[in-house]
Image (cartoon, rainbow, N blue to C red; front, top):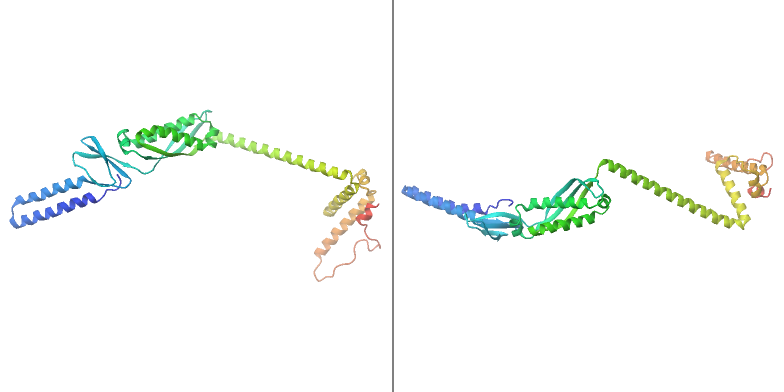
Length: 331
């Protein structure tokens, strides 16, 4: 039972204080000690009636025994019992109760020691069975839950415990409810909170997961290279019957490389013949053209705003202009 209800004390005060006051007033007026028995009788009546009045909360049920025999359940609210003959053996709580339990160093089916923590949600649906069928139903439920947890762990693999906790919760609820049903207890749900494995096994599983990630990364990289090769093959088929497109693509690639790096690129003569760019002098001229354009862009960026832009370009001192990519292509 929870907090003591003040109603019995109020009943005792209402009966004893007026009797005591009456006995004292009569004794003061007459001086006869016989009237003190009035106070004693008022005290006994107040004690008997105060102890016979009980109050049960809305969620409580009182198991009443009369001379050791079950007579019934009382509550919620105010009820009376016969003092000396009746006694309240149990106060049964009808609300949902949570009980935490765990299994330490229990071997799984694949012989891995684990520590498992779980929480049980249950309630008493039959207060008479909970009081009469088992000595301490709370302790019995806790031990039954722990035994069921060890039994489930011994039948499960570690991978199943880590991945399929919902299945273990359902199995635990079924086993515990089967054992506690005869005690008037209904198991609402069971939830596994945590599964602790040895640190050495944690390191091994971490290495396994890392190796699996690396394998997936290599597979993805190989698949990407295969897709790139397929795209190159499709491009080669497009250029096979169109030499002009291949020529323009090759010139554009070479020009972009020279434009970005502004350096001299040496390529085999066979490549020049294939691209119809002429001899090495044509490549040098193309490199000079790209370098001149890069230097003009740098000079334009570094020139002050008030200074007018320079009109002279490289090649004007000699009266010649740099060859264009179209002219280089005709060399």
